[in-house]
Image (tube, rainbow, N blue to C red):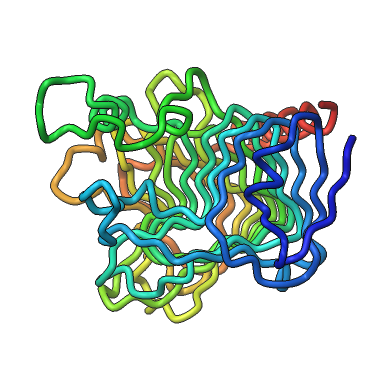
Length: 322
């Protein structure tokens, strides 16, 4: 495997665009002020230190784009992954905007690939910090401009980001992810293991951690295993673990600890919808505060929870063997 060492003075996008073989990029400590697209396969990007090897940018949803439209959620990312078998380790990806109630969504990391791994990575933003593709089908149609409706956006999002056939499997291990509203969202089969999930303060005084959009055909959705849900300015009882971005969104919370900012009901149905009829939200062994989960959620048996953990371990093993 080829190795490249970079500093904040290097043109990291140029380096990534010219990778043709499996490569490890070592990032020296420093702040890399750039918006990046990783389109190449079989790349590892490893920072010298999670807190000080930092990729940061500041796009936001209400920002005017060169095409005359607003950026919208999905063009605000700091780092976008479309290459397959990409690993991030020991670094932080940040969208530095801090007022989503004014500027809209601010994505830090967007992952649009079949296989992705993050280890000891910090993901820092406010609203919509982490997007885990695939897109919901209705958004693929909308942003592709596949109809004659002029309100649909032809070419709004590059095809390599928008189209991703099949499932995406993503693993986030020992990561630190912060945000306010829907800050982990999308339709990937994604495992969050031994992570710190941090809810920030928000002037709207209400927040949501996960906003899944899984298809009913997907057996596995989001699984949070052994994670710590902590607050950093969020008010008591104001944060929900999840709300379904689309019908059939799936989240499992297993062996996690909760602080007092998490609402006892745990889950919300998403505004004026009937997604409480279709959402697949479940939990097992949540500690740290008293809970009174909504009636439409499910308490997993220990056996069912262990099967999800087993699925995670199998996925992790396959990643290690690649």
